[in-house]
Image 1: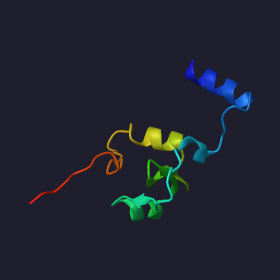
Image 2 (image 1 turned 120 degrees about the vertical axis):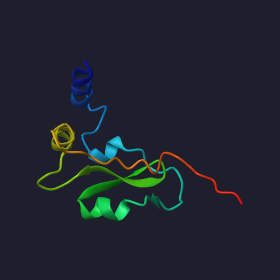
Image 3 (image 1 turned 90 degrees about the horizontal axis):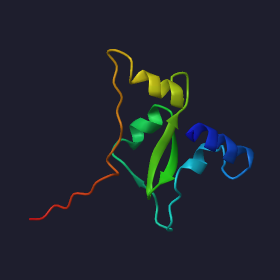
Length: 95
């Protein structure tokens, strides 16, 4: 159902196939925040995009990259994936 709806919207030109079109753009003139894993994402071929004020990978390029390969990788026996959630919470230190 979702795949069919997306195909229809693509044919009608209502959505873009660009990977960057799927990420929300920063809404201010402030520079994008880089997470603690930014350098690792870049080193591993992450295609970085603006998302909620952060610069995050939308997918990874290269031989082992791509949405389907990434999806299948973490479902194979003996393998694991890492998801950078450092942009999802805030900690305030007092004292």
